[in-house]
View 1 (spheres, rainbow, N blue to C red):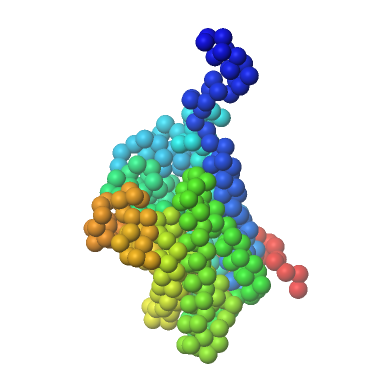
View 2 (view 1 turned 135 degrees about the vertical axis):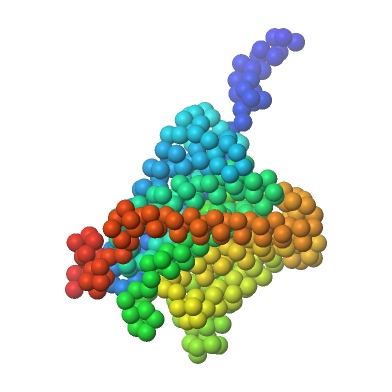
Length: 432
């Protein structure tokens, strides 16, 4: 018998380690791919999307801000951001055990994927979230203030809230459902952009002067890249190549399509013509709104969420700009903030398995607070309010602090007229 065992292990040596081997190659491959897709969302997706929306004299400043924020955020995530978000701490903030990725080695795992890969995947989320806020202060904020604000905000707002929801913090313990970042990414970025727009004040000429996008081709290309990249954003958040990832990708695509078509027809009915700008904005609204629910709901639920996103976010843009006259330049709050809020709340409804064809996986199956839709809606509401309030207060304080440190947040009136490409970077986007 002993000889037989020895012969088997000699012929198939991998069997000797099968029981102890925990790394899953399929899951690792999928998260490697998803990581690249999420980075692709920022560079070049978001950069092109935002770059096309601003005036031609500011296009390079937007591209520069996206790339610079990506660099700053990546370094800070390595130094301390990841540790604040995911190392063991208390209910509100992580500890310092993973400073400089301490303990993250080739052989260390997070679940059944390398911890280095998990940290890198989460780094791409930490890159895109402060980059989204650019849309709230576009065309008028000093570059030095942009960098300093983004750095402080990442550590004071994004990293702690990530810990609250995904790092073992108090919202996660409550049973908050946020599959891929409704609270962590979209509500934080949307609220921060709204606060920034209020603190800085409107661009010169707003709201009386028309400020159309200077290059819709660039914006449409960026939107397409965001749509594709969002498969990694939501599908990768399953952290496995499994049914959850597949359903998250399916729900993501359906919601994006529904958001686009709803916004297009709504705009067509209200203003007489559908526009490319409205259609691609509807895509982003659908994508942002499905994000917290993507791995929990079914296809029919995703369809409803996308339709609601298109209609609600369309009207939110009108309220912010035409009623409240807040110059959230690129509509970050009405699209990402409002989308994140309604998507987080609707996750509690459509995750339930009691809605016939609109059912999701079931509240108990996805780790919700209980089986009651009403009870889960309350948990989601608490998560939305806590995230929004903390983000608003912290962002306001950070902006005031950065303003004092940089001699004011805004460029001068002359620099704003000249354009930030020349004023801040001595470059032109176009050689006219």
